[in-house]
Length: 198
Image 1 (cartoon, rainbow, N blue to C red):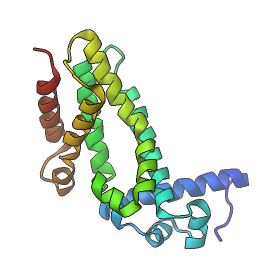
Image 2 (tube, rainbow, N blue to C red):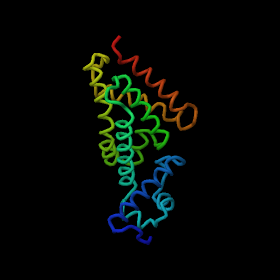
Image 3 (cartoon, rainbow, N blue to C red):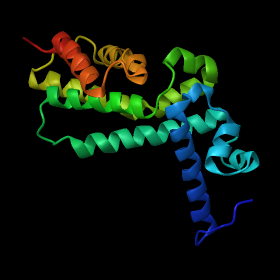
Image 4 (cartoon, helix red, strand yellow):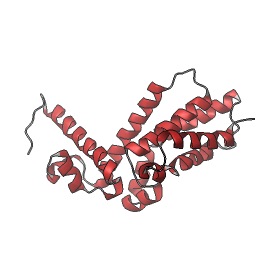
C-alpha cells in the first residue's frame, strides 16, 4: 500500500485518483484506450491492482471518469481560447481544432469499437458524459442560425454529422498522415461550405 503523503486522507485519495487518470492519459497515447488493461494502468500509476479497483471497479468506470475529465478539459479550453465576440464561423473553427487536438492527445477507438468493447450500457453512460461537449457544438450552430450566418435544417442531426466528419480524421491524425492544422482546415472548410448561408 502506498504511503500517504498528503495532509489528509481525502487529499491522498484525490492525488491517487489523479495519478490513475494521468496514467490512462499517458497510456492512451501509445496503446489506444481499447487496448489498455487495468494491469497496465496500475503499473503506469505505480499502484497495485487492488488499489486501482478501490477507485474504479472496472474498465468501464475508469473510462467514464477519464472521458469526463477530457470533456471538462475541452470545455475549459474552448472557453479560455475563444473570445465572446467571435463569429459563429470562428467558434466552429475553434471547436473543430480543439476536437482534433483532443483526438491526437487522447487517441481512442471510434464509437462502434468503443460500444463493442464496453457493452451498450457502459457506452450509453459514456455518451452521456460527452453530452456537455456536444452541447457546445449545438450552441455554436444555434448562434449561427440566429445571426443568419448558418442555414441548418436540423441542429441535432447537423451536430452529429459535424462530429462524424471530425471523427473521420482520427486515423490520419494518429498515424501522422495529417497535422491538427491541416485536418482542422479541411474539416472546417467542408462543414462551413455545407452550412454557411451564401
